[in-house]
Image (cartoon, rainbow, N blue to C red; front, side, top):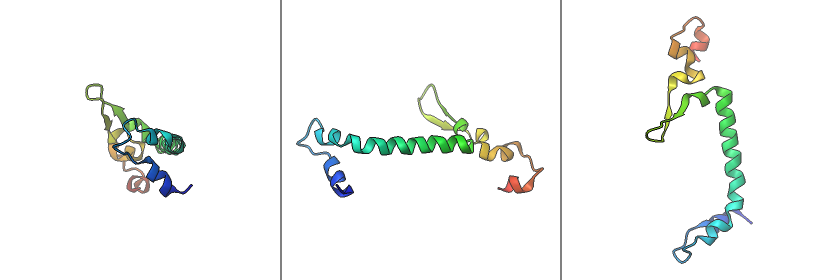
Length: 88
């Protein structure tokens, strides 16, 4: 099975109101999605980005605060004691 046939079978048709063809190929997409999300969260922990994201309780939207991001910690503190790390 090549990728073109998978994409062609995933398309939504108006004659398929229950989206059977969409659900039929869910098993081929789910592992890829899970792997991508696992790598994303892993790299966010590694680089210290994960703590910079919060969910707003009122709007249920994801918010980013760059001052909590570990990559920009020296910039947020304005710590210029080590200029090579600061410029990095």
